[in-house]
Image (cartoon, rainbow, N blue to C red; front, side, top):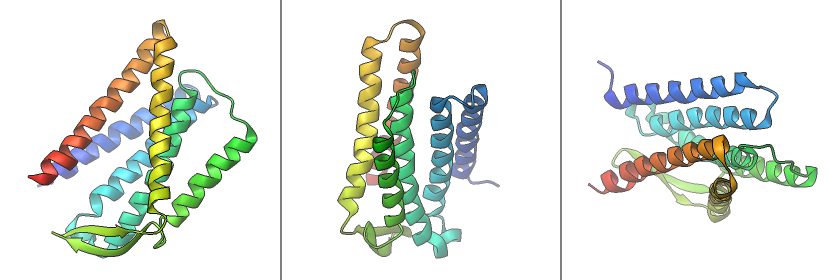
Length: 193
């Protein structure tokens, strides 16, 4: 019999991945569609790494999976930012800014596999955990800014948009709100119980 949490994970992963493919194939040359697809792919791998890092069967790989979880978090938030910046209309980014953004994301992803972001790994109630490294707060700040600026961009665009664009942005914001509420509930409320 399959674990209900694993079954739910498989369903969620399939929905995210198929949605990403559907959006991408509608217009593969559109940067917004590419960013959404890349974000969906990183989300799928991040969800799998996050789930399996706490599974007993993968205990020998828990440290690697936690580092992968953190590394993918950088790219996930970065491509979320790029998606929000370009949704619903494409936004041109200067080459200098693009190089800076990509270099920051790649550097922080690489650093997340070192002790500079997470260190001193240990198990607490069979769940992998770690202490923050010297660069943890820079890592955290990058992810926070990508998410906050991305959401801010969507809200500002929503206020100015009309018609179909306003409806599209509304659905994206509603999806974010529902996802954040579920994450909050499972991680903070159920985590305490």
